[in-house]
Amino acid sequence: MSNAVQKVLDGAVADGGVPGILADVRDGRESWFGTAGVADLETGRERRPQDRFRIGSLTKAFTATVVLQLAADGALSLDDTVERWLPGAIPNGGEIAIRRLLNQTSGIFNYTMDEKIMGQYVGPAVLERRFDRMRPEELVKIAVSHAPAFAPGAGWGYSNTNFVLAGLIIERVAGRTYAEEVERRIARPLDLAGTYVPGDDTELRGPHSRHYSKLLLTEPDAEIHDVTELNASGAWAAGGMVSTADDLHRFLGALLGGRLLPPAQQEEMFTGVSTEGSEWIPNTTYGLGVFWQELPGGVTVWGGGGAINGSWTYAMGSRDGEHLVVSNVNGDWGNLIGTFAELLQAEFCPGDTR
Image 1 (cartoon, rainbow, N blue to C red):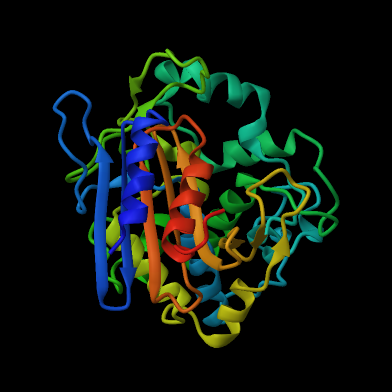
Image 2 (image 1 turned 90 degrees about the vertical axis):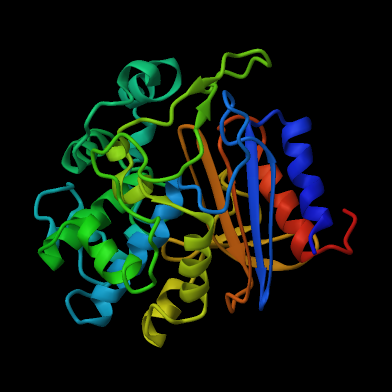
């Protein structure tokens, strides 16, 4: 079914040097699962469909879905300001609507770009600090210690702070933890048995691939470190979740297929803002926690992606959710955005040789 996809997987390992990669393709009733490389560099075990992995910023699609479900319930409005639900959290909270958090047009500084955070939690310091606990309120304080990148609505800029604030709003509105709301509203109804918010748990539950990192060092012979165990609280509602390939198919298929949101909220989620000029993923438009990407072959695919130490994930497909590709690399080096683009091109534009 997917010889072209398998070729990309093989190349990612042989040429890109990643430890292992998987791709799970669904098209109507047809399915295909392929891998290259390994799940565990010590044992040589292959990657498996049931393996869990950290999904990074694909978490944002779950967060946005919960917010939109709360909006559908009448518990909040996307036009509500941050100040209404989180008084005093950010200096200009009265000027920023929830919608601007979800579509990345708030202008709020991205806390992960703070020099102290970069120095402690990115690069070689990860080995010493990866078990540290970070509270959402701490992350927001770090962000607001910096000037905004732009005035609300005056531009587009990727900021994890937006989704930490969204997670805090979920907790304030729902009266439950963010993890409980993801479980109650998404994971349990869709029977996503391998999907959860880990909180302060440092070990991955159940079967999983090992996660490997070069700590952002670019030398070809940079040492590879096993960073499977870490505290993902510093990513939280912006990028801390764990899932499986099968679960992501169920979630994305239900989301694109309109089975998680009423029509009004579905329209909100897929009303987009161009990311052009932002030095983000090329040829993309950002909705509410999701994005869509025009491939070189002229086909547009919809979904999300994410990266966290030792793991990169991409889950994209047709607008109706019937044709999907979920892929994960259990390493965090190389041109992985390019690899995922090649995978999507191979599956959705097989006759295009560009």
